Image 1 (tube, chains in turn green, purple):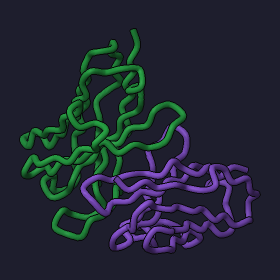
Image 2: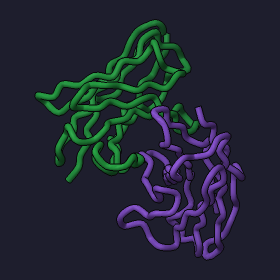
Image 3: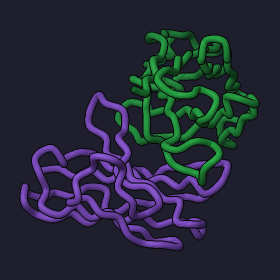
Length: 123
Length: 107
């Protein structure tokens, strides 16, 4: 079955960077986009961007452009999301998620989600 | 970016009643690439509807989606106790996706 397993909680100081990992299993890793979505405490969902695991091509939300980097390690079916210049507004649960259908098909939304990684930014 | 506005912010209903949730976009959502998710506390979102009206696998038929262009609706008929949650719409029509701010369906 499809599984997305994320790395553990992080505590960072303002100005620092954080890197969250997401290991995929149970499907052909290169065939599906992987996305990152975050949710601040008590707030809604915020789309950050996506990665094409085969080519490494990324699309980022304009809000995070310049501060976020998504990358992958194909040898271990893992994607990474790094966010720099953290501030308190970046305190949130960060989710990786996979599209419902393969890249070759018509666009589809997020059908499988990781368990979430809490990132806390505090001095 | 396409901005999605959901209404109402909160719906207070009783089990057995029906819920109607609205999602309005600032631009036409091409090909009706509009999804609905359900989220419960401490859990990741769960996909309910894609393509504005197609239910994901295993989603009960009391959940239905409709709409096109800029106006979309999620209807939950005969609310079950497990349906009380937060619901989000999302557009995936471009290379920059966006979510609505959410509607809480509470008892």
